[in-house]
Image 1 (cartoon, rainbow, N blue to C red):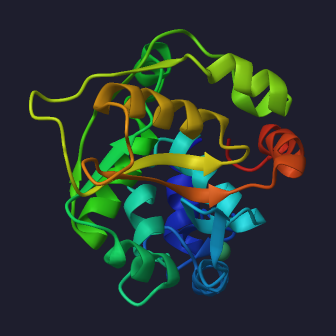
Image 2 (cartoon, protein in one colour):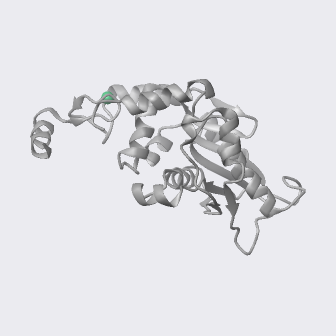
Length: 245
Ligand SMILES: [Zn+2]
């Protein structure tokens, strides 16, 4: 099959990860139509909460690309998506991030060990690294998962909150940051249960009176924002995508 695919790719061009159609002008993953669609999606300003930034809304194209990042071994998609997003200079999120107290510490939501072994990388780390390059800052792996957490997408809001409330612990460096901004980075923000638990763990570790004069500011940045009501439907759609899984 690989051979047939190679021949097809040679004749018709490789498949676009956005629409699944063969194209001779991929960049290297999207055809020109999908690039335009992605750029349109990146213009939607998303601030799901006062301290939360999301780079894209959940659309068929963004869902497919994040699916590729998580399940199709395309870790480079994190950089691609960040570079095309409003985190760029003069973009809505880029402008917001530039106003935050420096330095910026990008803290990825950790992946459970079993999933890390299966996937080979943590997509949140890839997103954090891309953000650090894009807006300036560094990646800090300050969080660890304490317990196994079942797939969040299938649970109700209440069940999610119970499930993840105590799921993370914090491993800060010897020199605890006393200024700047700590930004928890995740792939998809839905109810905020996961990132909320991460923020709570960081807050506990850094100390009381935080955020305040003597502590860094806390924020969250996700690649995608998915309305809680549609997250279950999105999960079902992910499972049913029949092209090239
Ligand atoms: Zn396409």
